[in-house]
Structures are given as structure tokens and as C-alpha cells.
Image (cartoon, rainbow, N blue to C red; front, side, top):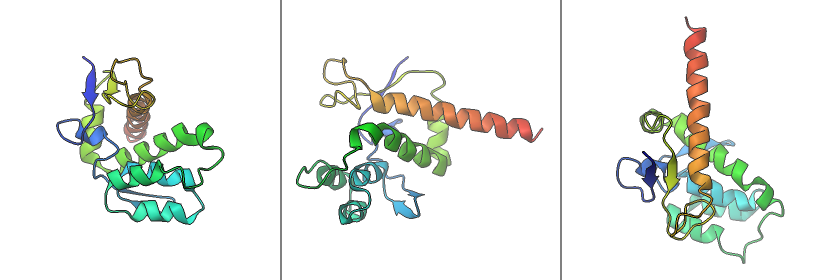
Length: 154
């Protein structure tokens, strides 16, 4: 059974980049994975820190999409790697949501965004669902790590 998520509410709300599950990465604390992702569009500039410090992920997203800010030139090449890095750290940091992710087994995970055809499935389901794919990859990374840890302790 496919697992759909979009908002921060419900059983799978923690899959949203807007969920309030902060983490430390690259020596600083990120309030949400949305803050981290949007700020990385401007890594090494004051815009990065401005986005990190905003109060909520909605504002971080708005700032990150503001094309008056100078988007890093390699963004299209690195954005998926950056998304995976933030999402992985989020689930490594919080045992409660790691359990939710692992409990999905082998089910497909879909960001049910009616407007996002890249990270989500889009209104008609034809989107790339890259966030859902990254969540499934993160699930596998964590599962493999736990299996190796368990095997080495036996």
C-alpha cells in the first residue's frame, strides 16, 4: 500500500520537510530540513545564515525561492544530494521518527503535493516524487546501518 504524505499532520507528517525535527549538520543547528535545504542554495553567503535563523519553514521556503538572492551556480547538480543529506540527518537524529520510517517496510512513499512535480507527485500523479524516493533511500541506508551494527554486536 502506497504511503502518501504532504502536511506535517498525521502519522507520516514527520516525512514533511516542514516537520519540527531539527538537527545539527556542518557545525550548526537547523530547525527543520526545509531550513537546511533552502539555505544550501546560498551556501557561503549571508543568505544562508538568514534562512537558517527564520522562525518557521514556510518563511525559509519563501526566502529560498526568492530569485533576488544569488542562487549557487551548481544548484541543479547538487540539490538532490543536499536534500538526502538533510533528510538522512533528520532521521538519524530522532529515534521516534526513524521508527515511523522503518515501519513503512518496503512500501512506496509519495509526497502528495498537488503543486510540486519535481519533489512531489503533482496534481495528476505524474510528478517525479524525488522527496519520496529520497525517503525510501534514507530508509534503506538506516536499515542497512542498523543491520550492520546488530551483526557486529553478535
